[in-house]
Length: 325
Image (tube, rainbow, N blue to C red):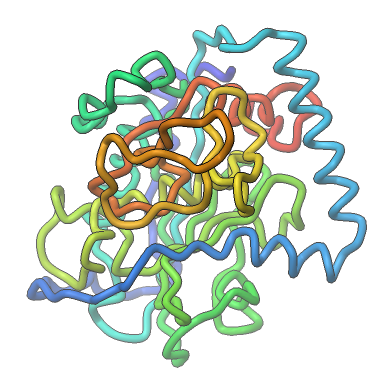
């Protein structure tokens, strides 16, 4: 993995706006009600494969590559170096409360680092049954760029228009070397969606509903999505960006291609009990507190060793995100 000195990191950290605009004004805190978590990553993947049949072949090749890396290096990849991932955040806003402050954007980066590095305080809530699977990933997210763009559009969908300047959005910044994140007013009750490795670079990155971007525990004021206000939507979507699937495999008792996550009957919502069981054969308990399930932000607080292996494999030489090394 790529090593970066503190001095070099300081040079990299250059936050700017692409337009001459005043900083967002302080706003009173308001609530936005979201009935349940909904991520459109798989829906977008299906749309992309329908539009580009060769994508399925690339996805299959990535699966084969990932399996080979884990087989060759062994489960529980021994990685000591930290991979630094510069982040470009596109704040696309129509109303003042959608023009997120620098503090709020930074709070989201902080949450990503806490969650991926297992520095989140609520990791202590992982039940005994899954303590051995609880792990950290050696990745560090650095806020490199903020692009602010005012738009006349009231809301955005899953057609990736928000990622295109020609359609009123904002083009991604150097996706081979940056994680691009778009904050905007998503419609259709969506909290977010991501593009898996292997997709078109011109649309690579993750999209987050503005009211679910950042952490209310770290920044006050503004509009927040009730129950989805701790920054875990971005953790979930960045998991997809790193090739992680929904823990239930988007099918009844489906497969998420991870060796140590229990088979889930389906998605879990809200905050299940710690003894919540699965109806899938041979799987007594479900890992509903995993970031790749659909629970409330306050009820998801772990990645597993197998997810770590899968997420890191894509950065290996020859992998779809090897350019980040």
